[in-house]
Image (tube, rainbow, N blue to C red; front, side):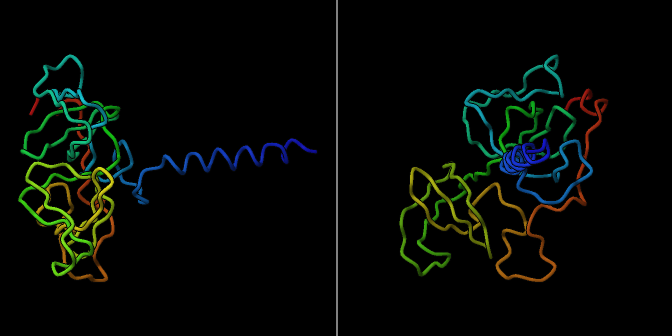
Length: 195
């Protein structure tokens, strides 16, 4: 048995483990994270501080107490992300306080349907302000999950979806993930100026 034959399975296992934790976006963007900016993420913890600038020496602007709240990353440094919350407030959060999982906030009362069709059976009503886990969107509808219930909601009733997810007809040039073209890396000087 050679060293190569022993290391090969270990290398394959390590690569498989890395693939599980890899970001959902296949493209590599010119940002510190390599991911598109803007992009939607969620708060990882029930207690997250949003600061005026990208360091712990900056004052706290907002304290968020809702794990799973969707936020939009609009700029980033190596360790910090400038985010916009569903109410449009902006602040800086450390990257470890954010999760790549997606969720949406319901903007208007809307039906949770069995299929992406208004004529399909209504499973439940979603009230404004409710946070639902996002599974996927297609043709103007999003499949959502909360407490074991799954269903489809019109994307236009939600905050936390990309413009291409709102489109109801498919075209060949429609992106399948957030594009890199508008990616923005914040400089520390920019962050030091606050919001």
